Length: 282
Image (cartoon, rainbow, N blue to C red; front, side, top):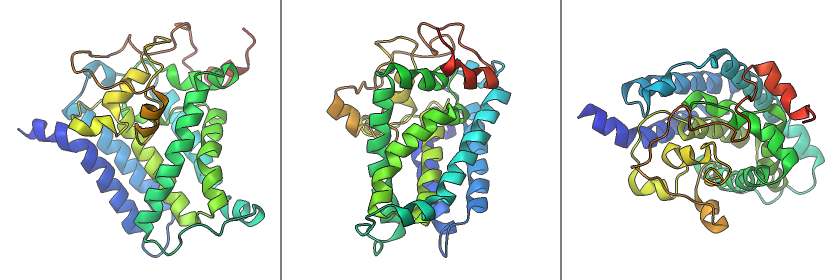
């Protein structure tokens, strides 16, 4: 009974619970260190749930990738932190900034930021599967051989910078304040943990609009056509409009061997090699 409830309630409780905690911490001003601690708690919660109700137990077993994934997470989250710290300077030199609804409750400002960022990230993600240069860097993320929450944070830092730019330029032009930027950065990390989770989550009709693991597993299938779907980060809305949405099919199960880069079974696994791979002439 507990496992049935966990499968159905895990995703919404995880997302709402951690964002509510972040919003509570932001009362009086957001500080990065408490948010970093909250993210560590989210990573540990994700790992625990993956062992209690796993989608595929084999995806809980390391494939020589734990150290690499930790390196990706540390570098990428550090880069995100630097980006948010630099936001006041960027806002000061960028024209505009008068349209942001500063009078709205913080939760409403965060919701607006998520919707705008989701649009930019989805288009950047979609384009990264179509432009050869962008794919070189995005392929690092697709090289994973198993899906579990923590490797949602695994990206080449240059591709992460590209997606970050697509997500935040409209927000910066609108004048998004720094405390909302901190919350948005945290929300992105929480969503990535859910999107790549190895929890056997059952979200029902929400799977049609919420871009969590049941839909995102299709995106990581190592097949150039079959995996060219479900690009959204937070929602599936833009995938519906682009014609790239593919719903979950409970009769189709995925596991190690189904994921990866279709034409590169030899894709490097080590962190340093993955940093260099996009620059190699092939």
